[in-house]
Image 1 (cartoon, rainbow, N blue to C red):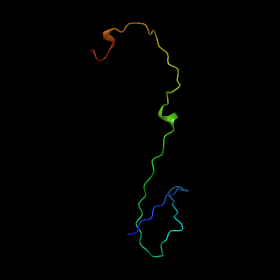
Image 2: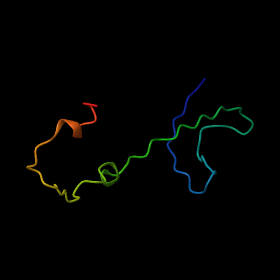
Image 3: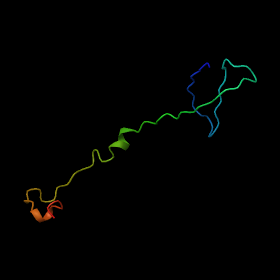
Length: 71
């Protein structure tokens, strides 16, 4: 079995064209399609980056009853 690796980009939904392959008409082939993972832009990963943070009464002591873990 010979293996040919080709990376291609679909130009139309659902249509993939492979040209100039060293194959003859009538040859039987097996096609496996692996979709590459798209990289997520950093803005999407860290959507809250750069958002202002507001502390409401930051010096107020924490009461143990306020912690869910303590209950």
